[in-house]
Image (cartoon, rainbow over all chains, first blue to last red; front, side, top):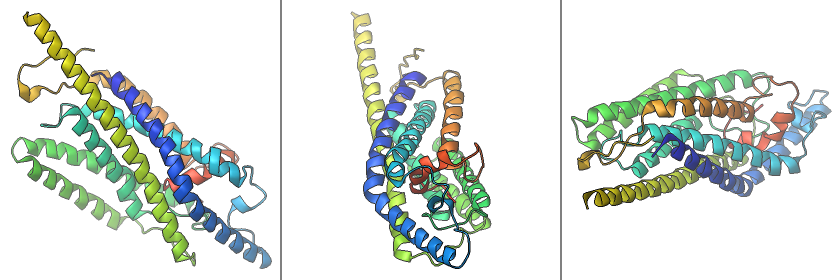
Length: 258
Length: 70
């Protein structure tokens, strides 16, 4: 196994994840996104009637991309590009950890990287700063909201990496389950503590709660799809690679012993 | 490129030298940051590059992948 063999498989698994995520986002996400844009346009029309400028540019004259293009090529570009680079990064992290987590096969350690990645990069930041549909949040706060979001992602990823390192160290003295439980606890203490210190997610105004719930659920399904397809595909590919190389090594040993 | 073949069953799983991964990691990391910037924050939280074509193009993905957007 080499860095290259992991990276090739990661890019392929990520491409597949991006394609599947595009389909899932279209089926589950687009209806609620359309509903949110309807709310947004109604608000904008209302504000216009009051002599006030529209809160957000998508409904205004600055629009350069049609909704149809946004829903198809635009959404596809985003999911496939993010899926592919995510696949590459996850594969290289998995390559660095293969054989370095005691008792785990290459397939198992790769699956663990994808699982930890989903929790640390997607799930935990989503719980603190959930995805917001169009019409929620203004241009005046986008800078600070984005800053807090990425700061929290960074804290979560660093804490997860530290937790894995902690589990590795404890693994030599404790049972694997105990080491894992302590590492998970340490991770949760950090992300809950830092999450408590960081500012709360922005106000939602009077955005309809049912549309918001549909959108956020769809967004979480979209993120989970990307990580699940990536994790399952990469785990399978790495597992097969390891088996093939192990069989080849066995045959070499047998041939050498004759 | 080839790994040592350990005799003990404990160490049956080969490792990949970190030095071999490092150049791939630097390059893929930079590409990943660039792609994530354009999908997540470009022409939104960070007004670069000018205009809003990229923002509009990835608009739905930016919302559904959970990034803060307008």
